[in-house]
Length: 99
Image 1 (cartoon, rainbow, N blue to C red):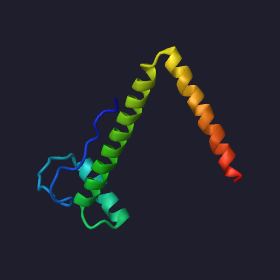
Image 2 (image 1 turned 90 degrees about the vertical axis):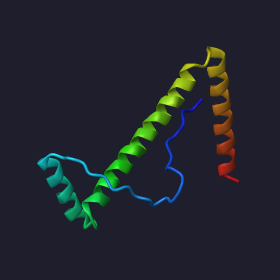
Image 3 (image 1 turned 120 degrees about the vertical axis):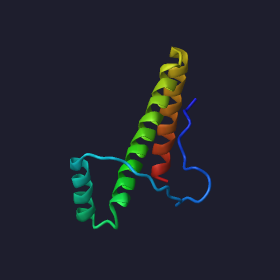
């Protein structure tokens, strides 16, 4: 079974929460540099992009682990069956390309 993917909370999709965090001066300077380079409206928008990118990567890795766990759990007979179905599908795909 593939693990649950985190989704946005229900409600308005663009809803924001005002938070205050303490960051090192180096981190603040980095965020300001990125804001300037991207001509972003705010440091908050840059931080939002960074968090979203980290979330997407986390989700991608989670799905990869779930797929790997699924195939690792299959018996040899099930793996052989999966391989045969894959070969069949590739053969069918190849046959439809020239049509």
